[in-house]
Image 1: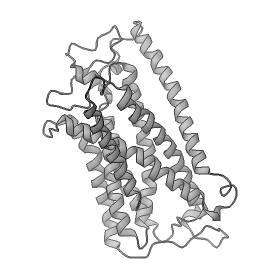
Image 2 (image 1 turned 45 degrees about the vertical axis):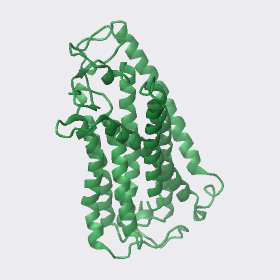
Image 3 (image 1 turned 90 degrees about the vertical axis):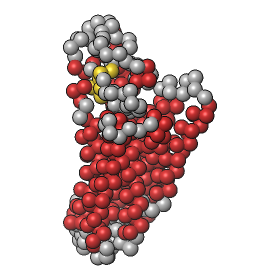
Image 4 (image 1 turned 180 degrees about the vertical axis):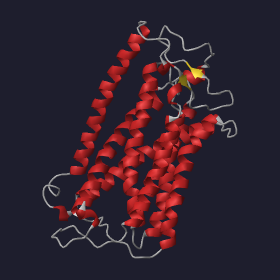
Length: 353
């Protein structure tokens, strides 16, 4: 860690001058609360729209936000993680073996296979658990079977207890479950799969957010443009996460989890920015240790997000969820447009951040 924070008299070929120039101090300090507000606005807005009776969002608007957010997460994996990792890990000053092999892509590939392996065994475990419940070995009193509908998209969604498994012989309650509330959550297995996906997405984005906040407050002459770009970056990422949290069913005893994860996301970047202010004169982002550390984390998180965004967001939403079965082609085109718009917006921000 000394290589990162203290510029010692060593022969670090990558050790560059600290970019901090002493300008825009007020703006740098303001970035801490501002980034918290924009991050929270993006992450909590979908949850408030899903739960609150005050914020009534039409179903078409909620769907638009959902697909836009999916596009944002997809672009984050490619543009903001994998591309930045490739840039950091391909510096000539790092020397061999980094100059002889595309480590960023290799680490991202490892991330993809890690997530696939994890997903494969998690799926098998969930399938076995669901089968046991269907055969009557589960307890009717198991609190994990009581699910809370998070994803209310019209006035009729009131957060009633959802049916946990259409395959199970046990009933969760006497509440009448409407078809639109369970069309893509008809089994306990798919519910847990979505919850797992939310947790993985949260981890991948939060790790990346640490480096985003740290790099902002020590930036040089490009601070203002970077500040604006990162503000949009945080809002769009929060929107992508928030919509996933809001359209996922959570166990009744875990209904607080999406709120906690949204808060964790909202705090990560501003806290990292505050740390950046503290080490603004000593942090060396171009050092060997900093380049490798940032590059490895970005590449690994990029592989995880790329796998999840393609397998769990694009493929599931458009082909396996049932949302577009027996629906007009126009509806699919509109959803794809919002998906593409989200990806385009986040990819464009990658020009500056």
